[in-house]
Length: 79
Image (cartoon, rainbow, N blue to C red):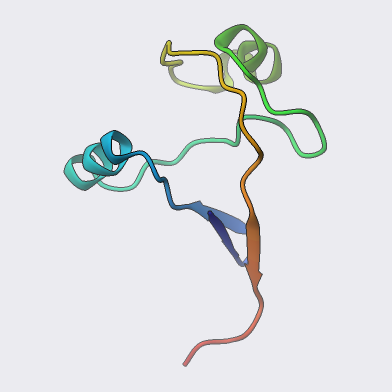
């Protein structure tokens, strides 16, 4: 799931390995797997076509084929 606050999306991962990693390292700032309006990258080759050298590193893994994140926008001011 993702939450948008003031035009910034915060993703809440499900995979336990990723949650455990983030608990050790703290928050991770990264782009989406796709520029707005384009199909998400399913592998590193596609991601490099989208982002090139604008990303500090790419992590090899399996080919991804999943539904895009659900985005929830919060507009209400919180006191």
